[in-house]
Each structure stands twice: as C-alpha cells, then as structure tokens.
Length: 151
Image 1 (spheres, rainbow, N blue to C red):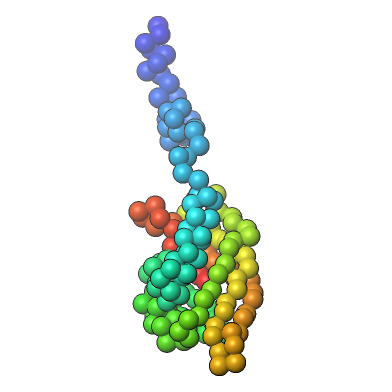
Image 2: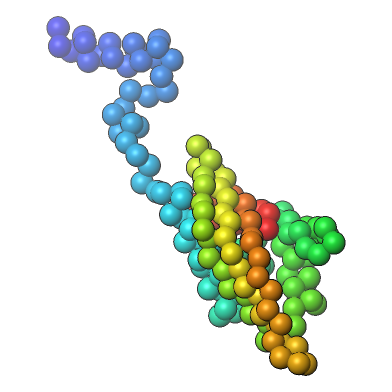
C-alpha cells in the first residue's frame, strides 16, 4: 500500500497544477538578488574610482543600456555610453556614490537603486563639485551577473 501512495503523489501534484512536488523547490533560492545588486552597485562605484568613469560605465552596462544626461539627452548602448564619457569627462574628474535604497522584482530579474552621488571635476579656479541623487535600473544577465539598463 505504501508503494501505491508514493507513486500517487506525483500524479496528484500534476493534477493539482503544481510544477513540482519536490520539497527542495520550496526552499529559498541560493542567491540573494538584493545583496547581489548592492554588491554590483558598490563594484560599479569602485571601478569608477580605480579604472575611470568611462570604463566603469562601459563595464557595468547592459548592451542596450540607456543613460539620461543634460538637457534630457539619452545615450543609448554601452559603446555610445563609453564614447560619451570619454569625450565629456574632464581629466581628473571623480565620481563617488553609494545606494541608499535597493529593491528587486519578485522574480529576481530586475532591480533598482537610488542614492546620493558626488561628482568632482577639476576647473581652472579649483575643483567644481556637484551633488545629486542617482537612480539605476539593474537587469540580471544570463550568466547571473547584474548590469544596468538605465542610469
């Protein structure tokens, strides 16, 4: 009798519309998307410090990323984003930021961050400093990494 019940469980689950009756499927995923996005954001900021702004915005961009800049200009695609920063960023300019908030979609494929940034750019009469709030939308890549799609 026990054998019949064990064989009946998968059939009952199938009839009930479940994808799987495997108890392992009910466990929390082994990854934590919120922590992964936070880490990606912090790595992005650290890369801007170590490798420069243009390189960081290139390395962390999804192929189809878009950034919005002055006068509501949209720069589309990671190659164009890199070229934009190579042309517009003054030598010696630095930017730093950290997320104050991170949220993730229920399916763990999209997330967003926002926080404060400080942009310092050398000028003839000293350093010009800009402060503001950033907003970044992140997308999980096929390899499990996170890249930004909007900044």
